[in-house]
Image (cartoon, rainbow, N blue to C red; front, side, top):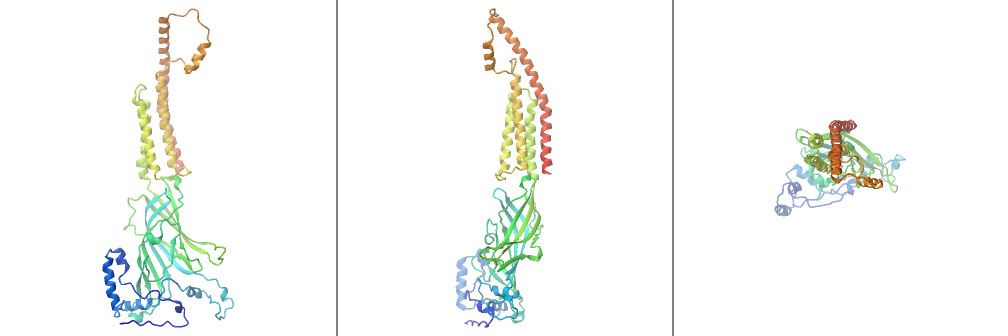
Length: 467
């Protein structure tokens, strides 16, 4: 049966509506996109339904309601004048009793934004990107989608599909300004709930992926990071659309018993909101740009870094300091120190991959530098002790300097015989070596106390700075 189009009443804002599409969706796209059914099947079913020329069931009040609401509905344009008239604004040329009605500032359509935060999925500080699982809610008013429930069997609400490819109703272009990926890509496509009074609620589940300017990273891994998320309209200024906070706060925390934060590296600790209005551009002095700022604070699970890195560094340093108890003639003494140094550098490289290459120095950098300096000092002390242990010279004067001094001495006319001279030199070298070996033992005894105490003091200083 041929559907008869009803003519709109003259003299109302409904005259400006245009018929955007006369062919209705045969099957909800949520089934096509999210259920994975065959497109060929739906195309066949769609052709069969179009042949009947009855996209909605006449016996269903919901079908009649959808047909009447979408008969002359334009999903691209919005009647902004209906919003402005509520504030007392009148169109130019129309008579009014208020002399300054034309000077009333026009404010945009209020769009309430609420975010239900569930979990921090990942944080990439090297790329300054966070991934947050949320439920994203938007609420607005569309005067074209109003009806009397008594005319439709008491139906007080209906549902319209909103998707990337095609939407049945107009939607505000609320977007994440500091985005790594847009909301259309990171949030799911869902139906919007429309009440009989024209209020619309559109809820979607998905991810927020903002590009953050992280603060608090200098105390890594005991840091508490914060990220500011900016949400607002990308196309419409405040003259046409104004994002506001839903339920005065604009956010809620998700059911932790369902999603949970167990076995997660980051945990939400605090959220604050602020409506910030950016000044207008010089070419459009009447159009400011409001935005909602969400400041999200989350703490890092520092226990894995204590177990996997800090304790390992301390153990490696203590292992390197065990060289002080090995005799100098033991060849593995130097090898033990070098192995500890290489293991420390390798552990440092693994953790450094999670940090960006920046000028700021973190607590992790301070601890790493201190640990490597102490291991390097252990190697230097080991080399010095081994050198003294085998030294036979009577002083630390280099041989080339001693040779130059010897050249300047006068010639002895009665030198000893070669045998006696060699015996004398051998005895003198033995005496010198006994002195240097005693010095090497004293250095080891001093290092056994000084190095652990100094290392403990360094750890205490770094810990106090973190606190």
